[in-house]
Length: 110
Image (cartoon, rainbow, N blue to C red):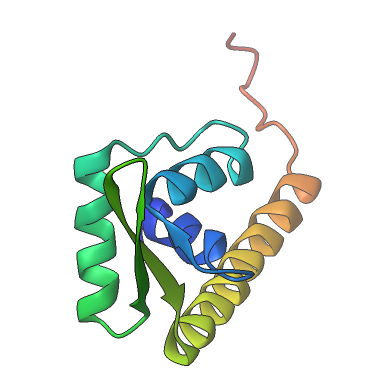
């Protein structure tokens, strides 16, 4: 799962959101590290919809513009939970290695 897809799914956990709302939520969740451009966002959403992880919720007109809202599906929740577990396991493995790490003896070479 890409980082963008991970954060889009995460952004949709609590409530359906429209595109601009997803972009803002992803930025906040990632502390600004993930900045979705419109083309990237809709590419990710199209893939997630095709995979059955996200589905359209409703459409509204706001300020003369159509807003399509998306929501997380049950399969999306399951996929996100599995990805959270995978990332946590990876982080634990790396943390254990880092705690045990000792600089290699360079034999006097610096």
